[in-house]
Length: 160
Image (cartoon, rainbow, N blue to C red):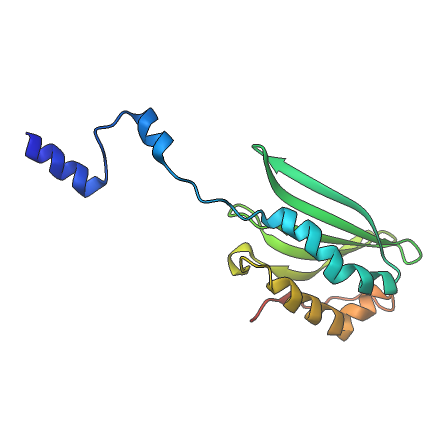
């Protein structure tokens, strides 16, 4: 019987230790807080260029789930054009990732401008630099941000 139990423990990585002892022995690797990092990095990468286009960072909303900073929204507003840019980071497995939406409050419409699913994001958030460069070099997006047009666009996708 002991042989069967040892074989079972070996095959299924189980132990004879009580559960409270096993749980206390589990070593959890420190988790990189992607949301807090995004809250610091995104305004540095996007803020000055958006300000040149008449947008001001009005609000940062954070969502906490089970005591963990889970997602964030950065709201940049251009009052003259009735446009609000919502830059979101929801990087965990149940969420959508990094997205930028542009809302036109005058016509009650919005556009998805940019999206990077969480599974394509790198741990150092280098994808943000790539997306910033694409974002500010795309003529259709710049026309939308300047309020020159309000038309359907294909949103930017992340490619390395």
